Length: 414
Image 1 (tube, rainbow, N blue to C red):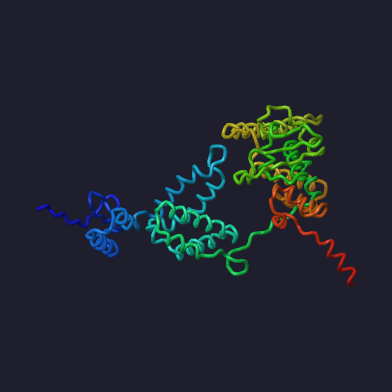
Image 2 (cartoon, rainbow, N blue to C red):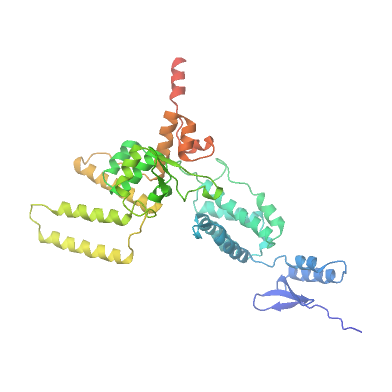
């Protein structure tokens, strides 16, 4: 008579979970000595005695509560690191996913993934509100968490009901939440731009002019290379290899007219794949300007010489820590503009202490300035094509609506 082996309820010391062994397979049941693990063990014993239950079905029934939320996050990030890739390296969306999943891991990392319900997701949403994130950013992060749960269901890491429950959590609506609203991005006035240009390096000035003339994104103008510019016709065509919607298969073509050609002409004397605008060259230009300003006829006092030596030592120390990159990033481009505004305001105060300072602005506002100007002069479709969008309704996000027509109509109704 064959020996009958009855599965036993055991402790897995490494994880603190209860487990049992059926047909040589280790089945984890949840926290040791908990009521839930006892119920699951009793159910598995009953199901294993039924000849009609196949092994795959038994294995699926034993997977509930096997993975912790933290384990699901780790598995997803391993997938995301190879899925959200730009030029062989993790892209922006990968790091956005990391930011979205941080509070999930902090609050519920030790929770079984199958127990992650809608109320848990709402708690995370409230946590983001308490951190003073704006409403639209909170909705984006909650949407990314839902995307992770959808992926986890497809990998059979959690039950489908977990994702279906998360889908019932709607986005925060305008005026119906305590979350703050983000300030809309406004166009920057062109006179302010022209005054700032006077106090920045030639490389930064050229990028500003290009954005103002073409409506390019900051990332598109900082990454320009000579090899991406077709200079055959009267109007040059810039086709960036890296742009926001490349992963969708969209093509981006930016026409460069005479003014744009004049702006970039001094920077075309380099290899075809080298960035046109170099922070290292801008730094060298600043050093040359300082040297020119020091060539003066007045007497140099000892205290000034000491101050110069201190500045040189500080500059060498900074240089040893971090050398200039070969191309601008969005952040370094923004900082260069901020520095230009600061210098412009210093010059204003020197001329007139009561003068009103320029407001600080950032590169993306130039895109809004371009869209507003194009919409007023050439219509919505021209603004759409210049911005590189597929739909005209997106232009409303970037361009201030032209109210001139309705103002004229109002005058006739007076």
